[in-house]
Image 1 (cartoon, rainbow, N blue to C red):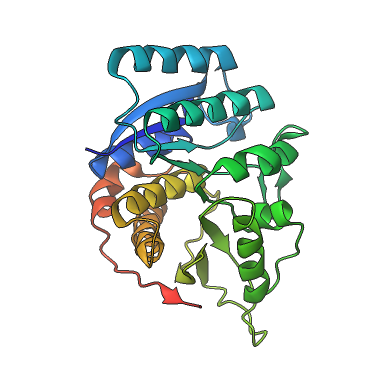
Image 2: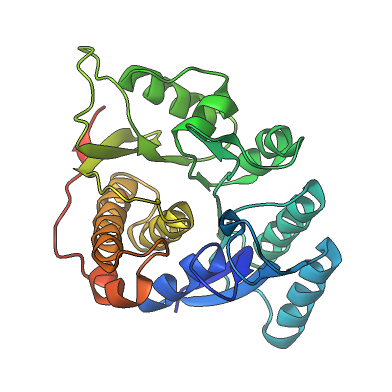
Length: 295
């Protein structure tokens, strides 16, 4: 059975970080060892929250216990998301190194959480530079949004060609697969992306593909969508493989799951992802999404 180590934040209420990743991964039939970087009452976007940030030593200690109990040879992948500081980041990469020592074929999927269009950066000073210099080159799969892709590559992304060039530039740092989790650009003919749709793009040495799904509008967009998307994409990459059109198949499956989750969340009228009501559609999305090959 496929086994993933997911190192992310944890909230008691709501669905971000590991709370947005672990349950969906389990619904897809994967075993997950969850190591939490924080335990908060709720997402910090609410303004008020309680809880604690765990130290890098805490993360290493938890992995020590897991390794002593079961070993790490069965771990096929490590997934990471928001990193509160460089110390946590170093502990995450230490964990990746330890898993790869036990299983050289293990994958590392890094969601380089740093910021977003309209918000700018929301991480501590120095994290973006550390992410680009250390985390991204260590990863097999990276899942930036459009803002993060632009910053990591020093490019302004306006057209589809810009996005493709930036993704290839990011791959040159080390990752085998780049998934751009939200894309709003002009095509090469300068026609704007349909405002009613949102795109995702995957780029590999074997080719590039994109999907477009209806844009779901929210009064307050739910947090955790990126965490969920990265988890789904990693899960489907583990099933489909990273060679050939495997990432394209993973892209299509992930986009269908995201669309289903958004529809359930919109109907629920909540600012939290409606993971529980959407769980069956996450496994078997009711709408089939096809990936368009770009090159």
